[in-house]
Length: 124
Image (spheres, rainbow, N blue to C red):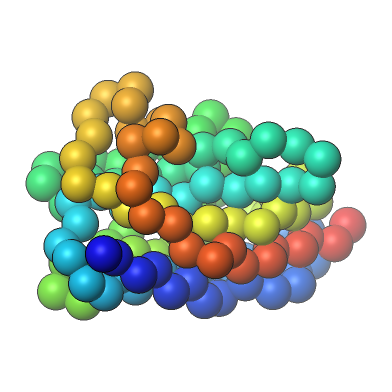
C-alpha cells in the first residue's frame, strides 16, 4: 500500500505562485500525477511525471505556468504553480501509480493511489 501526503495549498492572488508537494510512503511508485477538481466540475488532469524516463506531461491549460519536478530519493514530487489564475481554483490531488506512458498518463484510472487533496484558491 502507498500513502500520499500533500502539502502547500492555500490562498493566493491572481498572478501569484504556490508550490505543492506530495510525498509517498510504502511501496515504490514510478509515476506521480496531479489532478484537480473545482466545485461542480469533474476531476481533471493537471500534470504527471514518470520516474523511469523523467518525462513530464501537462494539460494544455497549465503549460508554461506549472512545472512538475521530483526527488526520487525522497519519493517526493513538487508542483510549482506560477501565474495563477482564478480558474486554477480547485482541490488538487496527488496521485501515484506503477506505470503509464503516453495518453494513459492523462487518465485518472492509470493511478492506483490518491492523496487527500489540498485546496488552492486564487482570488481575482
